[in-house]
Length: 111
Length: 114
Image (cartoon, rainbow over all chains, first blue to last red; front, side, top):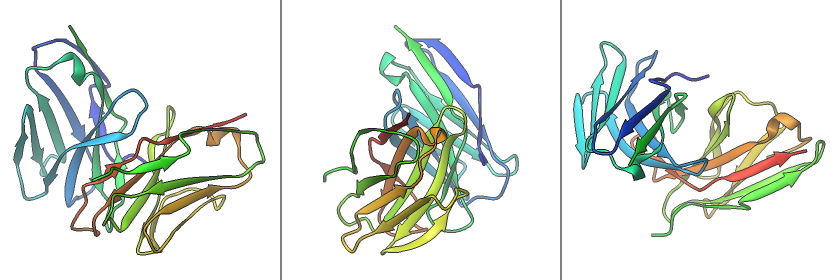
């Protein structure tokens, strides 16, 4: 089952624009993670935000977490063609290293 | 540090056969998780091993099994293959456990069942 649901399902923007993806989840979490996947390859970890954090930055990435609304957003600023990929949010399960992934957002950055 | 490696990268099997996939985690990582990715179901958790013990299990039939060795390398086995088992199988490793939830993924094994 998928706990996280990303929105939008697909996003197409021009190089240099910002891209915002949203994720909603259903149960309480310890942390939420964002991953990127290029064309059917392995996933690359982008950022992890813990339930007691509200915002986190990493380079051109900005992640926010609103536990009251059970939602998170990923902002990619000044996008590049190389950012074209699928982006997934994932939340931890009740115990251990069990990740529950959302369906993902397909981002296309046009040059 | 070398990343997570998976072998083989591609596999073609026929219905009814069995298959074994291998995953070598990052050195020092004791936790290995397996995921199945399909266009229809997305990314789904199969199981997680930590120090040679299965610690978590997803909702997959008993045809899917796994194990972890003392060097943390892990294998998963799928018996009596079905067409629906065609998928990208990903493994991920992490250092210790619940407090270290950043997962490092391998490139995946693409299994095609004919």
